Image (cartoon, one colour):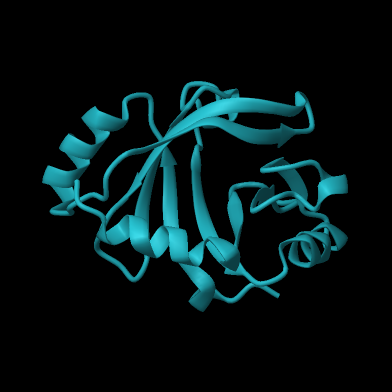
Length: 154
């Protein structure tokens, strides 16, 4: 079962990460971690199966629930293709088990860091049968990486 206390970010897909950092930073009074590029980033979707994308991302330094900006080359990260491109990110110690538990309740996998057969990798995006929500399960194996990123010099 997901716990709201495990939610650590709200993600937004943007078409220009630098413009979004500037406008949202000023509007919301937040400071940002450096933008990091993941190129190539292994990615899996039901439509394209295993492939690679490029993703640029950053987090607000303020928390405990951070704002994440994502700009990627996949339609999954295209705000024009996915108008409701927001998601809530949750830590999990057992990503494949948590994904399976949600799918048993009718949730559907939208994208992941690896195929279902490979345990979805370190991230997995799912939506409930009712729609209107996208969550990202994030393996706690990434906690040290994210913690370092949040405090890195810009």
